[in-house]
Length: 266
Image (cartoon, helix red, strand yellow):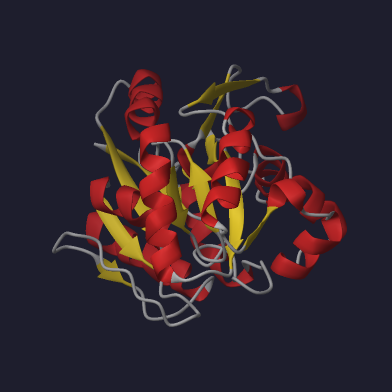
Protein backbone atom coordinates (compact mmCIF):
# COMPACT_ATOMS: atom_id res chain seq x y z
CA UNK A 1 0.00 0.00 0.00
CA UNK A 2 1.14 3.53 -0.82
CA UNK A 3 -0.18 6.55 1.04
CA UNK A 4 -1.37 10.01 0.17
CA UNK A 5 -1.68 12.77 2.78
CA UNK A 6 -4.88 14.83 2.61
CA UNK A 7 -4.75 17.96 4.74
CA UNK A 8 -6.90 20.90 5.73
CA UNK A 9 -5.14 24.27 5.59
CA UNK A 10 -6.27 26.99 8.04
CA UNK A 11 -5.65 25.84 11.61
CA UNK A 12 -4.15 22.53 10.44
CA UNK A 13 -1.15 23.17 8.18
CA UNK A 14 -1.35 26.97 8.32
CA UNK A 15 -1.43 28.98 11.53
CA UNK A 16 -5.01 30.19 11.95
CA UNK A 17 -3.98 33.81 12.60
CA UNK A 18 -0.81 34.36 10.55
CA UNK A 19 -1.30 31.68 7.83
CA UNK A 20 2.39 30.73 8.08
CA UNK A 21 3.69 27.14 7.96
CA UNK A 22 7.44 27.43 8.59
CA UNK A 23 7.40 24.94 11.49
CA UNK A 24 5.91 22.28 9.19
CA UNK A 25 8.47 22.70 6.40
CA UNK A 26 10.55 19.76 7.63
CA UNK A 27 7.60 17.37 7.40
CA UNK A 28 6.61 18.74 3.99
CA UNK A 29 10.15 18.11 2.72
CA UNK A 30 10.18 14.60 4.19
CA UNK A 31 6.92 13.70 2.41
CA UNK A 32 8.38 14.99 -0.84
CA UNK A 33 11.57 12.98 -0.32
CA UNK A 34 9.53 9.82 0.27
CA UNK A 35 7.31 10.61 -2.76
CA UNK A 36 4.17 10.74 -0.62
CA UNK A 37 1.71 13.12 -2.33
CA UNK A 38 0.36 16.03 -0.29
CA UNK A 39 -3.25 16.87 -1.20
CA UNK A 40 -4.64 20.22 -0.05
CA UNK A 41 -8.31 19.90 0.96
CA UNK A 42 -9.73 23.16 2.26
CA UNK A 43 -12.72 25.47 2.47
CA UNK A 44 -10.55 27.90 0.48
CA UNK A 45 -11.32 28.68 -3.16
CA UNK A 46 -9.52 27.38 -6.23
CA UNK A 47 -7.78 30.75 -6.66
CA UNK A 48 -6.55 30.69 -3.05
CA UNK A 49 -5.30 27.12 -3.18
CA UNK A 50 -3.54 27.66 -6.50
CA UNK A 51 -1.61 30.47 -4.81
CA UNK A 52 -0.72 28.36 -1.74
CA UNK A 53 0.09 25.38 -3.94
CA UNK A 54 2.60 27.51 -5.82
CA UNK A 55 4.20 28.67 -2.56
CA UNK A 56 4.56 25.04 -1.48
CA UNK A 57 5.78 23.97 -4.93
CA UNK A 58 2.98 21.40 -4.75
CA UNK A 59 1.98 19.75 -8.03
CA UNK A 60 -0.66 17.30 -6.81
CA UNK A 61 -4.46 17.39 -7.20
CA UNK A 62 -6.31 19.55 -4.70
CA UNK A 63 -9.81 19.97 -3.31
CA UNK A 64 -11.55 23.32 -2.80
CA UNK A 65 -14.50 24.68 -0.86
CA UNK A 66 -15.11 21.88 1.65
CA UNK A 67 -15.03 19.14 -0.96
CA UNK A 68 -17.19 20.86 -3.57
CA UNK A 69 -14.53 21.22 -6.28
CA UNK A 70 -11.94 18.57 -7.19
CA UNK A 71 -9.00 19.69 -9.33
CA UNK A 72 -6.83 17.01 -10.91
CA UNK A 73 -4.08 17.31 -13.48
CA UNK A 74 -4.44 16.56 -17.17
CA UNK A 75 -0.66 16.58 -17.56
CA UNK A 76 2.18 14.66 -15.95
CA UNK A 77 3.12 15.87 -12.44
CA UNK A 78 6.70 16.66 -13.45
CA UNK A 79 5.59 19.32 -15.96
CA UNK A 80 5.93 22.89 -14.70
CA UNK A 81 2.84 24.32 -13.00
CA UNK A 82 2.48 26.98 -15.67
CA UNK A 83 2.06 24.30 -18.32
CA UNK A 84 -0.21 21.98 -16.36
CA UNK A 85 -3.87 21.76 -17.32
CA UNK A 86 -6.40 21.38 -14.51
CA UNK A 87 -9.43 19.14 -14.81
CA UNK A 88 -12.22 20.71 -12.72
CA UNK A 89 -15.01 18.53 -11.33
CA UNK A 90 -17.92 19.82 -9.25
CA UNK A 91 -19.09 17.38 -6.59
CA UNK A 92 -22.26 19.26 -5.60
CA UNK A 93 -24.70 22.04 -6.47
CA UNK A 94 -22.84 25.09 -7.81
CA UNK A 95 -23.10 28.20 -5.63
CA UNK A 96 -24.74 30.29 -8.32
CA UNK A 97 -27.73 27.93 -8.28
CA UNK A 98 -28.59 28.34 -4.59
CA UNK A 99 -27.82 31.98 -3.77
CA UNK A 100 -31.38 33.14 -4.45
CA UNK A 101 -32.83 30.40 -2.21
CA UNK A 102 -30.40 31.45 0.51
CA UNK A 103 -31.50 35.08 0.23
CA UNK A 104 -35.18 34.11 0.48
CA UNK A 105 -34.55 31.94 3.54
CA UNK A 106 -32.71 34.77 5.27
CA UNK A 107 -35.73 37.02 4.73
CA UNK A 108 -38.24 34.38 5.78
CA UNK A 109 -36.46 33.48 9.03
CA UNK A 110 -35.19 37.01 9.78
CA UNK A 111 -31.66 35.65 10.21
CA UNK A 112 -28.72 37.70 11.41
CA UNK A 113 -25.55 36.86 9.47
CA UNK A 114 -23.13 38.40 6.99
CA UNK A 115 -22.20 36.58 3.80
CA UNK A 116 -19.60 36.76 1.06
CA UNK A 117 -22.30 37.41 -1.55
CA UNK A 118 -22.97 40.86 -0.08
CA UNK A 119 -19.47 41.57 1.23
CA UNK A 120 -16.82 43.97 0.00
CA UNK A 121 -13.14 43.13 -0.19
CA UNK A 122 -12.68 45.30 2.90
CA UNK A 123 -15.25 43.20 4.78
CA UNK A 124 -13.42 39.97 3.98
CA UNK A 125 -10.08 41.54 4.97
CA UNK A 126 -11.63 42.48 8.33
CA UNK A 127 -13.17 39.04 8.88
CA UNK A 128 -10.12 36.99 7.91
CA UNK A 129 -7.01 39.14 8.32
CA UNK A 130 -6.08 38.40 4.70
CA UNK A 131 -4.33 40.92 2.48
CA UNK A 132 -6.71 42.58 -0.03
CA UNK A 133 -5.50 40.54 -3.02
CA UNK A 134 -5.87 37.33 -1.04
CA UNK A 135 -9.31 38.41 0.17
CA UNK A 136 -10.35 38.88 -3.46
CA UNK A 137 -9.28 35.30 -4.19
CA UNK A 138 -11.32 34.13 -1.18
CA UNK A 139 -14.42 35.74 -2.70
CA UNK A 140 -14.18 33.71 -5.94
CA UNK A 141 -16.59 31.05 -4.64
CA UNK A 142 -17.92 28.29 -6.90
CA UNK A 143 -19.54 25.72 -4.58
CA UNK A 144 -20.03 27.25 -1.12
CA UNK A 145 -21.23 30.43 0.56
CA UNK A 146 -19.46 31.34 3.83
CA UNK A 147 -21.58 33.01 6.50
CA UNK A 148 -20.37 34.99 9.48
CA UNK A 149 -23.08 33.86 11.91
CA UNK A 150 -24.41 36.41 14.41
CA UNK A 151 -27.66 34.64 15.30
CA UNK A 152 -28.57 32.05 17.95
CA UNK A 153 -27.98 28.30 17.92
CA UNK A 154 -31.76 27.86 17.83
CA UNK A 155 -31.95 29.97 14.68
CA UNK A 156 -29.09 27.95 13.18
CA UNK A 157 -30.94 24.67 13.83
CA UNK A 158 -34.08 26.02 12.15
CA UNK A 159 -32.02 27.31 9.22
CA UNK A 160 -30.41 23.90 8.76
CA UNK A 161 -33.80 22.18 8.74
CA UNK A 162 -35.01 24.56 6.04
CA UNK A 163 -31.92 23.84 3.91
CA UNK A 164 -32.43 20.06 3.86
CA UNK A 165 -35.30 19.95 1.30
CA UNK A 166 -33.14 22.10 -0.97
CA UNK A 167 -30.34 19.49 -0.86
CA UNK A 168 -28.19 21.99 1.01
CA UNK A 169 -26.43 21.98 4.37
CA UNK A 170 -24.71 24.45 6.70
CA UNK A 171 -21.37 23.21 8.04
CA UNK A 172 -19.28 24.88 10.75
CA UNK A 173 -15.69 25.61 9.80
CA UNK A 174 -12.93 27.23 11.78
CA UNK A 175 -14.13 30.79 11.15
CA UNK A 176 -17.33 30.63 9.09
CA UNK A 177 -20.46 28.55 8.62
CA UNK A 178 -20.52 27.24 5.04
CA UNK A 179 -23.73 26.72 3.06
CA UNK A 180 -23.13 24.08 0.42
CA UNK A 181 -24.49 21.00 -1.34
CA UNK A 182 -24.60 17.55 0.21
CA UNK A 183 -20.89 16.90 -0.22
CA UNK A 184 -18.13 16.94 2.38
CA UNK A 185 -14.35 16.79 2.60
CA UNK A 186 -14.37 13.01 2.15
CA UNK A 187 -16.47 13.07 -1.04
CA UNK A 188 -13.27 13.25 -3.07
CA UNK A 189 -11.71 10.13 -1.52
CA UNK A 190 -12.95 7.56 -4.10
CA UNK A 191 -11.78 9.73 -6.98
CA UNK A 192 -8.39 10.43 -5.35
CA UNK A 193 -7.87 6.72 -4.71
CA UNK A 194 -8.76 5.96 -8.32
CA UNK A 195 -6.41 8.69 -9.56
CA UNK A 196 -3.39 7.39 -7.63
CA UNK A 197 -4.09 3.67 -7.92
CA UNK A 198 -4.22 4.17 -11.69
CA UNK A 199 -0.86 5.95 -11.56
CA UNK A 200 0.82 3.50 -9.19
CA UNK A 201 -1.02 0.25 -9.86
CA UNK A 202 -1.14 -0.18 -6.07
CA UNK A 203 -3.69 0.07 -3.29
CA UNK A 204 -3.92 3.62 -1.92
CA UNK A 205 -4.18 4.53 1.77
CA UNK A 206 -5.24 7.98 2.99
CA UNK A 207 -3.79 9.97 5.90
CA UNK A 208 -6.07 12.88 6.88
CA UNK A 209 -5.24 15.90 9.04
CA UNK A 210 -7.79 18.44 10.28
CA UNK A 211 -8.85 20.66 13.16
CA UNK A 212 -12.52 21.63 12.64
CA UNK A 213 -15.98 20.12 12.48
CA UNK A 214 -15.98 20.29 8.69
CA UNK A 215 -12.91 18.00 8.73
CA UNK A 216 -14.73 15.20 10.59
CA UNK A 217 -15.93 13.29 7.48
CA UNK A 218 -12.40 12.91 6.10
CA UNK A 219 -10.93 12.19 9.54
CA UNK A 220 -13.48 9.42 10.03
CA UNK A 221 -13.06 7.86 6.58
CA UNK A 222 -9.27 8.03 6.28
CA UNK A 223 -7.00 5.07 7.01
CA UNK A 224 -4.98 7.22 9.43
CA UNK A 225 -6.62 10.13 11.27
CA UNK A 226 -4.68 13.04 12.80
CA UNK A 227 -6.38 15.87 14.70
CA UNK A 228 -4.65 19.21 15.19
CA UNK A 229 -5.91 21.14 18.25
CA UNK A 230 -7.80 24.35 17.54
CA UNK A 231 -6.29 27.58 18.79
CA UNK A 232 -9.82 28.47 19.94
CA UNK A 233 -9.88 25.57 22.38
CA UNK A 234 -12.54 23.68 20.39
CA UNK A 235 -11.81 19.96 20.41
CA UNK A 236 -13.18 17.67 17.72
CA UNK A 237 -13.42 13.93 18.27
CA UNK A 238 -13.81 11.73 15.18
CA UNK A 239 -15.99 8.69 15.73
CA UNK A 240 -13.17 6.14 15.85
CA UNK A 241 -10.72 4.76 18.41
CA UNK A 242 -7.40 5.15 16.61
CA UNK A 243 -7.08 8.93 16.24
CA UNK A 244 -3.74 10.63 16.88
CA UNK A 245 -4.26 13.94 18.69
CA UNK A 246 -1.37 16.36 18.20
CA UNK A 247 -0.48 18.47 21.23
CA UNK A 248 0.47 21.69 19.42
CA UNK A 249 -1.60 24.01 17.24
CA UNK A 250 -0.74 24.65 13.58
CA UNK A 251 1.78 24.52 12.07
CA UNK A 252 3.77 22.77 14.83
CA UNK A 253 1.00 20.22 15.38
CA UNK A 254 1.03 19.35 11.68
CA UNK A 255 4.75 18.60 11.89
CA UNK A 256 4.04 16.47 14.97
CA UNK A 257 1.25 14.58 13.20
CA UNK A 258 3.30 13.78 10.10
CA UNK A 259 6.22 12.64 12.26
CA UNK A 260 3.80 10.28 14.04
CA UNK A 261 2.52 8.91 10.71
CA UNK A 262 6.02 8.31 9.33
CA UNK A 263 7.33 6.76 12.55
CA UNK A 264 4.43 4.34 13.01
CA UNK A 265 3.92 3.37 9.36
CA UNK A 266 7.40 2.87 7.89
